[in-house]
Image (cartoon, rainbow, N blue to C red; front, side, top):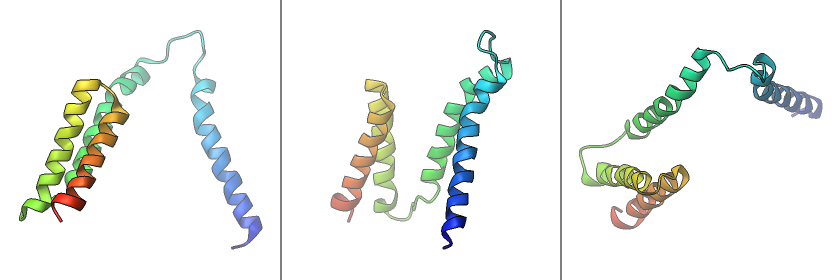
Length: 109
């Protein structure tokens, strides 16, 4: 690949990333409260994104064999229980993922 093309590509990606990070600070005045629609989206989007990720992760679940669905259900249950217990998103995700991977690679081979 051409080094000039690669440098231009990196520069464009850097500018776009910086612009998306700085745009909210440029659009909204620091002294004023953000518009109601922004506050609403900030409240409803995180649970909606999590629900979409759960559907995406479970959409290919194979119900014809126990090894196709039991590890996934146990992993999701572990995520829910860990989150209810500790209220820590990273712990919940990593704990559920580690349990799922252990089940898939050691128990349901």
